[in-house]
Length: 256
Image (cartoon, rainbow, N blue to C red; front, side, top):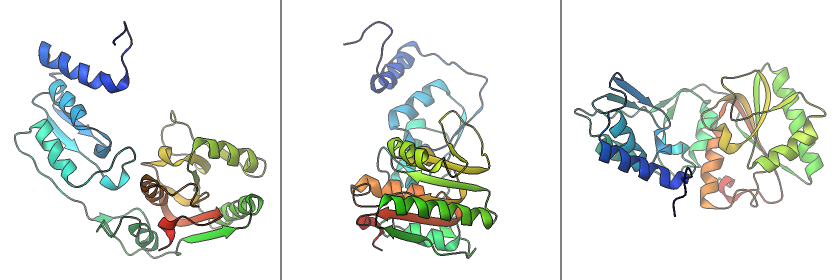
């Protein structure tokens, strides 16, 4: 039941859509162009709400179905967006050249997409990604420390350590912050800062770093189907260097 001044997030979009349809308001007539990024993260009802709020405007919709976390998507997503927004003239373009990661990193991450043909990487050749196995956590953390220092010596200014969860972030930070000048990323931060950052994978989406280390890529952390998507997102944050480490058995998604 609804209580005064309290509406759940799940109900909010539906109630907002009903309000807009019933009252027929055009809230922002001065807006002529709307840009929506991370299109794959929105649901059809949210696009319908945007269509009601910004009637008669032009839209630029940007997305990458490979970067979804909460749900799975296909190329049909963009046709669904067109149906929801009902533009007068719709043009759908696919960008097939990837400028972000090196050729070797792009080749490595493409194997996490179930054989789907993704973006074609520019042939900027660098080191092949590394998967390092360790006998225990102490050895693994020491390896991460050494790897970070190596990247710094090579001149890389932005380095990310990506964990599966915030709990893991807190744990690794408590160990490595004694030895490295490491910074925990928080949702309120804007823009990029040089240095060493540590974050859960869901906060890494949309960011990019010179070098990336993915922590504990074992069967415990990355076993479910949705975990494969998280691995893909974590690995594609890397521009020049990518390293993954684990104790125990490596995730079957990485036995490629």
